[in-house]
Amino acid sequence: MTVKEYFELLPSLKIDNNKVSEIEKVYGTILPETVKKIVSECDESFFIDDYRVLSFDEIRDAEENLEVKFSDFDIIPLFDCGNNDFIVYHFKTEKWSLFNIVDACIFKIKSRLDELMY
Image 1 (cartoon, one colour):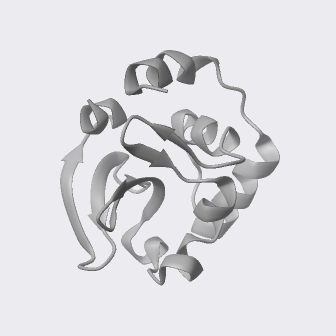
Image 2 (cartoon, rainbow, N blue to C red; image 1 turned 120 degrees about the vertical axis):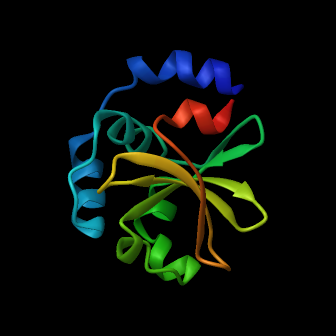
């Protein structure tokens, strides 16, 4: 799937309230609609061009599996970009960025997800 195809599909994705509430509980926040749709439709990980959408289990268990306390940064990892970089959603500021899990470095902060992926 391409980034363009994904963004065309995203508005029509259904929200799974059970999955959403589990992620909201793990990260201690209320998710916006776009993130709810991403979380709801990721039973398995899959690729969008060079980005890998994390599976539901990977998002839920990211802090343990990646050994990063994402909630301390007020972020949720959603896409793996390779080279230890992840696209994350900042739930306090409602922004998107890249986050390097080795350096704990936030960079390329954008207002919209598509600004990072195109």
